[in-house]
Image 1 (cartoon, one colour):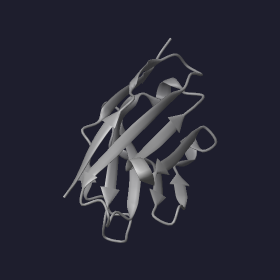
Image 2 (tube, rainbow, N blue to C red):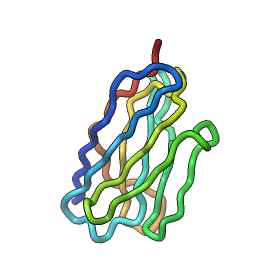
Image 3 (tube, helix red, strand yellow):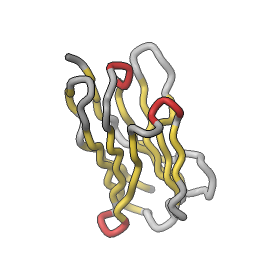
Image 4 (cartoon, rainbow, N blue to C red):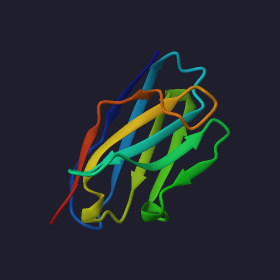
Length: 118
């Protein structure tokens, strides 16, 4: 079992930046994929970005060039750096991990609210 704890959400003005962190504990040696997802009110949860153990990354089109996913293996932590934030980025952001060698997410963090508003 993997436990994920997120931090870093908050309120920011349009054009601002935030960095989300997700620290993993437990059975972390088998983690293949780590990702960030978000869910806005009234909408389904959507993929934001993923990073796999080999380092390859993937982003939803709406955040390309603005968001960066990265990891620090020594700290068992991965990050989502969000720049040039827009009001439409407002959502609850969830980190997730998967250990099946695919992009399937097995474990989720508790979620952290990101609000972009002037």
